[in-house]
Image (cartoon, rainbow, N blue to C red; front, side, top):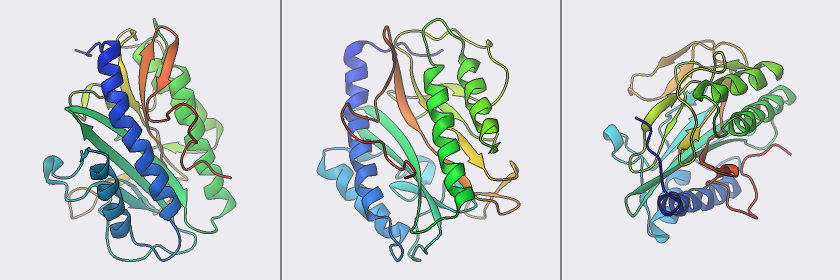
Length: 258
């Protein structure tokens, strides 16, 4: 069953999401050639705790870090590590925060230094897919309207949807019902209602949609080595339409290609 959140509950989720955004801004500024994802993880945890939050990922199903940091062909759930990022790398950073019993979740992907035009296009396409999914999140619609919108935007940009992963409900738990596919036909599934709060998160590849999980049990890699990208927002559905909680009013989006 999909929870319906009150305005007060959405405000509580928003508070956690505001920390997510501030962490993302700090990390975006820190991503340069030579920095390690382990250093990014340390920065993220310090920023979260300084604002009274708790890293939602750390210890979740024994995940060892405060962020997921996935590099190049790593699609999701990469472990932070001490090796430095190189010019031309692409890194996805996924951040989760728990604050006063409520959760926020968001991800962005960013190029390190100079990246190729095709990777820049993939970043733009993934961002456009996220925006399309959010625009389809409207009262009275159906769940797979979001899925269909994400897929259409991905295909229009020449990208491939990695199908093993998708979005999810969020609130009192990091992952709640429903699971939100990033592909498929529209007009199926439950009706979208005011008070739903979803994490919408397209995960795309330059080439193959096939992935495999590494020996660490978490890091998921494209089988052909193609670059993967991932953007995510936590979004609440209100009577005025979708409101992006991980993008506070007046604040810049994170990881948007120049």
